Image (tube, rainbow, N blue to C red; front, side, top):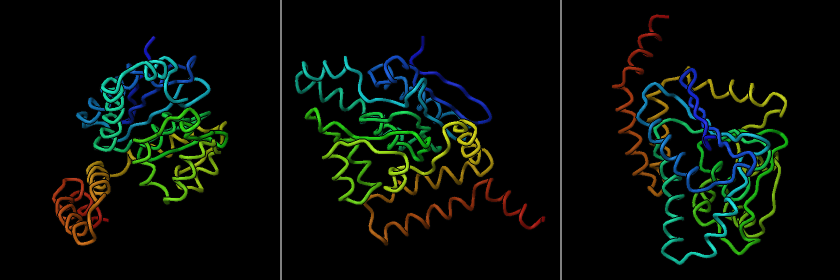
Length: 251
């Protein structure tokens, strides 16, 4: 049985974590599978959006128990290599041209919560639970913290990371960690309706917008505006923009 299910329909790629008996816990093969599929998706010009979701009762419960055991028994170099593999996934998720959307149901904990946080948009059921409980076992969600710090105020990020409590989807939305909450009963239908918006808007404009948004990290005001001016000029030359302008004047 494949640990990662892949489906393409109507320009939407759905990647389903398929280890329901393990609450879709992350292991080496699942992380490598995600990276491989994201690289393929980035080269597929027919795709407009990617969904990551979990099979069974949960989105993702974090690291696999066997992975935790290996961490405890490995030396610094092995642990660094293991951490860098996850780092590569998070970097890739930012670099993939089209939007990546997490569809969270059940529990998204530890590395699973980090995976959701690393997506461009997060959708959740009204019963979903989130959390970064690593501190409870003496671990630090160090790479996830890089992403979390870009999503939350400093004091809220500090609280979530250092206390390790879990929280509801409603609380996550209040924090600014997720975009929309849908009823569990209609989650798949509502989520697909939301995601399908990306099949109707300009692919090139979305690609340029995602790249620009993340490139602004660390830039000062003037540098950000300068980069924005360049992207503005590039957008005007795309076929989507030219077609959109013609359509506007033909109305």
